[in-house]
Image (cartoon, rainbow, N blue to C red; front, side, top):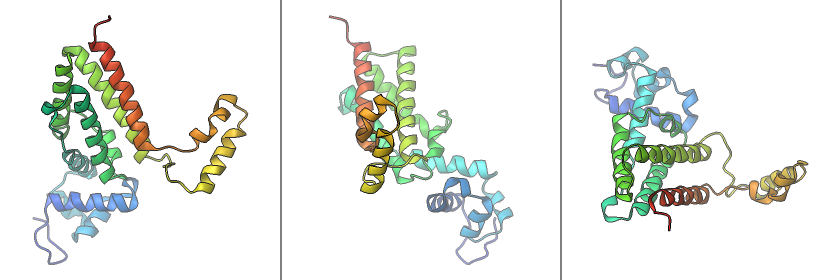
Length: 219
């Protein structure tokens, strides 16, 4: 049992992970260290090893917390299209609860137990759409790749353009218009801003259109 430096009671793995998430959200995952976590929970660094293996173990546990926060919709009462929409939106909602830590999930091994209920649900939806076996797995991977890419842009290092300071947007648009690249200059206004939710919804509909073409016989 880890010896507290305070009187808050016995330390638990859950508290360590919870404080690690708080620190990551406040300072960024890249600045997270076992020493900072130990200070936050009130023990010496070595005492953490009674509950976690190492920093990688903590990061994995943080990702599990985010994944377990996905509220899986009742897809059995939906069309397969609405089922995939619901899963995508639930994934985004869970990720945005921890925007600075969500990158841990986006690079997570999808064999992790916390990810399995989501994958199982997605496969059941695709089966109901008429996709089985390898075809369902291919579409699942395309769907996951789309979500990861879209959310990585939203929670990662790329700036959030929607709602940005007007002067900043104007400067960005002006720079794009003066780039000397005609295709970019023609859409400088659109490139200068980005509504992440709208972009996800647009891309999601593209995915669904592609699935429809796979499962609908040619007329």
